[in-house]
Amino acid sequence: MIETDILIIGAGPTGLFTVFEAGLLKLKCHLIDSLPQAGGQCSEIYPKKPIYDIPAYPEILAGDLTDKLMEQIEPFKPGFTLGESAVTIDKQEDGSFIVTTNRGTKHKAPIVAIAGGLGVFEPRKPPIENLSEFEDKGVEYIIKDPEFYRGKDVVISGGGDSALDWAYFLANGVAKNVALVHRRNSFRGHLDSVQKVMDMAENGKLNLITEAEVVGVSGNGVLNEVLVKHKTQGEIKMATNHWVPLFGLSPKLGPIADWGLNISKNSIEVDTFDYSTNIDGIYAIGDVNTYPGKLKLILCGFHEATLMVQSAFAKIHPDKKNVLKYTTVNGVNGF
Ligand SMILES: Cc1cc2nc3c(=O)[nH]c(=O)nc-3n(C[C@H](O)[C@H](O)[C@H](O)COP(=O)(O)OP(=O)(O)OC[C@H]3O[C@@H](n4cnc5c(N)ncnc54)[C@H](O)[C@@H]3O)c2cc1C
Image 1 (cartoon, rainbow, N blue to C red):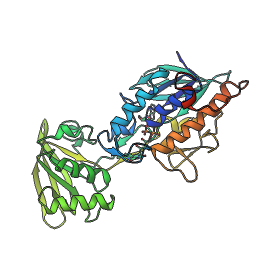
Image 2 (cartoon, rainbow, N blue to C red):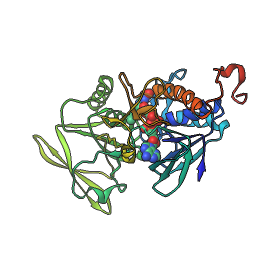
Image 3 (cartoon, rainbow, N blue to C red):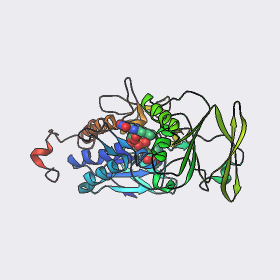
Image 4 (spheres, rainbow, N blue to C red):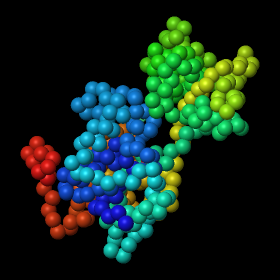
């Protein structure tokens, strides 16, 4: 049994920063994450993309932000259970909780902070019958490292920011050839990203195929060809070893949805005073929660984590007074 003060479900940026804020109050944390590494969406979906709205970092790669957060929380020595999903929660007579993972690891804590983001996320898959045969054998739903595509032919599908940004990035001197296939003429992404891709297509650096979709995949053990159905030109066979359908992620709260929490639109309802849920002792912070005016941004998760640990401290130490201290006065180790 792993015992801690605050058990954090989800090691994304919100969960990681919670460790820091809790550490300043001398509260110990342990994190559980279904993914094999920390960082949540930042490390799983877009580690090499620059983020521009982290205060004091005009630009930082999502993967580097994760590294920095890990460095920042290191003095507080958090525990990690990685590659396991929190499946059940049981309230004990003393008010604490026991959270068990799919592998049977048990964790006990008086406070549970759910920082589960999008939940256990699954990519939206196109309805192609034999698709699963080529998953990780040429069909990739997430671009983890663009270097993997260096010098290769890649077909990307999708009309949102991910598809546009990756098509632009890979066509900019990384992949040998990039084709972007989208079923409409218009895109859902930011105007700036759409313009960049259009310009590249016009300059012959990217093969933009609109009003078309990939309807078939084939190969001998690994992907060799995709079949594209075009609205007016009919079927086009394209030789490629890599097809990246970027149709977004289907957010699934997963097992947490059955924990008796008030859920609205796949998110956990919270009181914005301290981000507490309807169950005493369980909080929800970051992308996983919802309240009027909620913005799913890293910055907001950091703020929510900061307020949440104050409330957690009061619950764990009802007899102690907590006075806000600046890190500039006490340093990190002085807390
Ligand atoms: C392409 C893209 C670009 C983005 N760009 C920006 C940007 O520029 N600026 C910005 O502020 N935000 C951006 N975001 C949003 C930002 O990434 C999220 O707001 C942020 O990751 C939320 O952090 P989180 O820690 O709350 O959740 P997440 O990062 O989603 O992490 C949650 C973690 O919880 C884990 N988990 C869930 N359920 C369980 C369970 N039952 N058991 C164990 N583990 C579980 C998941 O595996 C995941 O690792 C972007 C998102 C995407 C997809």
